[in-house]
Picture (cartoon, rainbow, N blue to C red):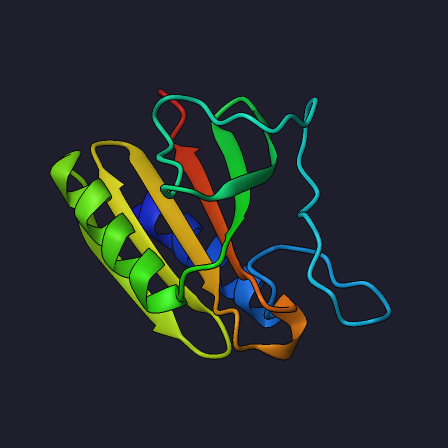
Length: 142
């Protein structure tokens, strides 16, 4: 579990360093979809909750890592509250949080970590929509 938490903290720190929750930013400062391994799609797997009314912009992954990016017109505070409820009701425990220009949360259960990154629509790079990224990281079986 320690390795998973360290991995999740590392993922969160890397995403926040770019202040884009892992998303790309073009030359105009507009936040774009993050790069994902595998074949990207716009649907999410059943174990990654999609925020109600959000538009999935990209979804994809390989092996133990899977990422879903989406946008919503709701505020970051509304998104964070909803995901806290969704993850805790699914048995995940809060394992870390960081709030800078973007907010990130880490939830863990067994050998699975869920990293949540959110950029509020009030941030200039978000261009009027709240950007959400949920990354599932499963610890490989030994």
